[in-house]
Image (cartoon, rainbow, N blue to C red; front, side, top):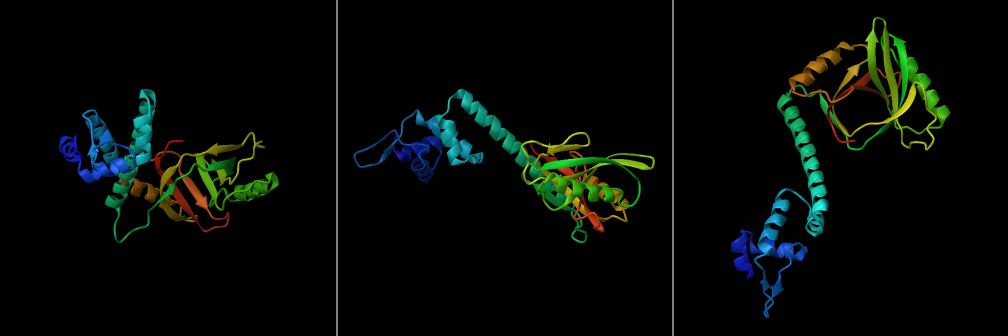
Length: 253
């Protein structure tokens, strides 16, 4: 078939067919003496598969890999693409909920995304309930970080685990820039790699913890569902404010 007839047969424009030829995806079965492209009937199905994958936003390189692969490899690629699409849809759903819930007059809540998997070192403590209850723990843990010779990113994270009566149990964490090959940890100190995550965040005052409860109501009003433990990020143990972080979308670890 000439390119014109093949175009009519497949529904793909001649320019699209030339593009696929240039990229090596759909090379004509042959050429006439005048150099015109000639396609075979067997290439009709191949053209439909290639174009369908392009419409599914699969890259040229990945389509090359798929077309050259055996059945097992193709199934593996399809599984990976399905997972990527699911993650994109979940991310778009978060964006939709955020935009629908936003008010032009009040834009306090923000979305923050961790694209990578940060590695934390956590120190567990039980402290007395009071204003900024983990402040002393943060100071002592910063000293421990120095003693252990660890390099961490700016910022101190807090994860509250339990609250009973006048006592609270929580973990003070730091993001490691490099994980030592021999981790000098044990007991109430451990390392954890967290998933890529999207957080709904709000800056809160350490002297007004009730704003966090109001923030929780706002998050639910947006239609978000929490996807893990909530975090508090402090710039320093003496910072008057902290960033309250509620995970609303967790990726694959």
